[in-house]
Image (cartoon, rainbow, N blue to C red; front, side, top):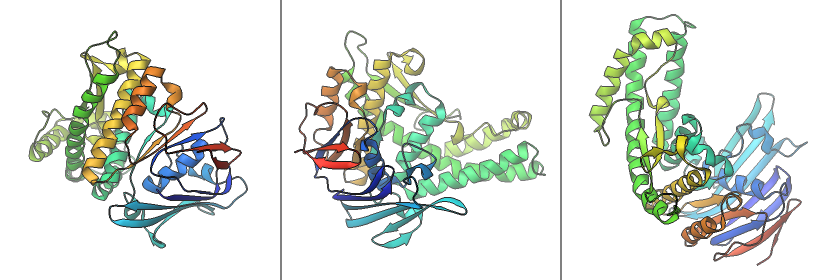
Length: 369
């Protein structure tokens, strides 16, 4: 990202930010605007906030809209991206533009790519499965607009089926058959792509965590495993997943009617973290869980870079405060060679090669070096 402009975003009235390649550090006390700036940078890649689902909060108090604009140099060439969040009679809406031309969200997504980390991501290991599914979906949607379109349509059909199962709409087994077949058509590629993606992540997570795990605590590396709601073997072919999905839906029909909800499909899948054969979500220490999440983020960055053939942005909000000195050094050593990364810190500069440092105070951004 070569430049970012914010107008009426959070506590910013107006700011122009032109970060260089390499590692940029934003220093300052809490509630000064560091995280707000990173949130805006990430939104130019994903079109969504990594901090809130209520994006009206992004609009500065007393204003009608917030505007985020950025210039990026990507493989396809220079691109200007814009996201406007506006309040209106129908609630909060967003509008996107690429090189000044309005586009739909699916045409905006993936023009630039980003990997983010916030302290909330530490809940990925021990939190609800929905958090881990969301993380997989966010990464794969940036990689493939088709994946995002399948995910949206799957959710729409799933909602219709659940309404039928709960008796909110009239229907019979023939309609359920229609919904189930459509869920197989949409859900099978989601499961297949998730499995391939996790398999690519897994090797890197093992390699990275071997260097980070405290040898006194465990000799084994962190491993990750995709756990679909279907009983299919790892690396199962597309056709096998589809047939198993279809048969499982048929076998669970009575249970789904009794529960009033769909019990089979990618909306029930999970990602499992293990260390020395034990699931980290249940048995891991906080330090081990942090290591697992950071290793996952390094793997996500690496896979996204390899598949897209260009480096994504790396946005790390308040990551250092969650790590001891040993893990800080190990983590920063690993990200030191990335094309462009952003870190916030309330303390001093980290011990790593820094391309630029800025002081953020009262929504004013001042370059220090």
